[in-house]
Amino acid sequence: MVLKFLKSVKKWNRGLMNNMLYGYARVSRDIQDLTRQLKELEKAGVSQENIFKDIATGKNFTRLEYQRLVNKTIKAGDTIIITSLDRLGRSMELIEEEYNLITNIRGCKLISLEEPFLNGTGNEDIDKFIQPLFLKIFAWLAERERKELLKRQKQAYNSMEKDYKGRLISNRTGKALGRTPTYSTLSKDQLEIIKEWIDGKRTASSVARLLKISRTTLYKIKDEYL
Image 1 (cartoon, rainbow, N blue to C red):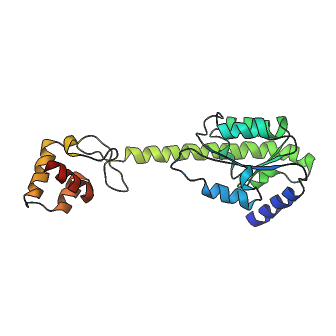
Image 2 (spheres, rainbow, N blue to C red):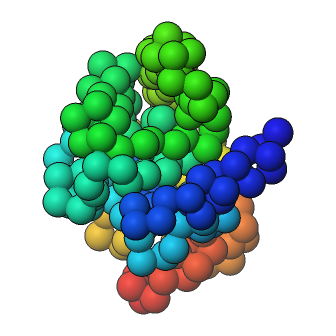
Image 3 (tube, rainbow, N blue to C red):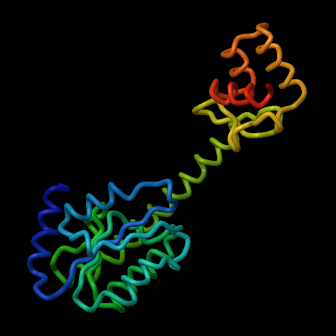
């Protein structure tokens, strides 16, 4: 079904003639990767130079590239492709507002690769009836998925244990989150444990596990200590 839809997008692209085909990709933070979105947009027929990219939150539309695309670049008859509706924003209300801006006010077509039912049937009379309905459904699902993600993140955060300094310990790595400990940040008890290791009374592995630091950090602290 996805392959069939991509073929229809490319066919649409060939029929644009003088109209332009653009893509929009977004991630919320710079530690996230745009690669998957960019590949999907290129696969759908968008050239690299016509893909607008933002690393910004989806809670509002004060995004430089999005604003440049929607307010300064597109013209009536152009098409914008996104991978999914949640690239437009977090909330149902914001998604609906931007969809209306792009399609009804700017006079452009908006294609969502993950919500093909939203892209129309080719029959204007039918589309006028079903597209607003599909938009509300998909926008609601995007908002709901976002809320569920935040809920899971909060649950994971609350399940994290803390070390002696009150720092959260990662469930994945077992290490404290935050800056790497140094000699000057350690407590007297911790320094005593390290001294016992230096004196040969403890092993490096046992001390690293006890203090929840890496062996590399432990040896750096030893160099500072000596």
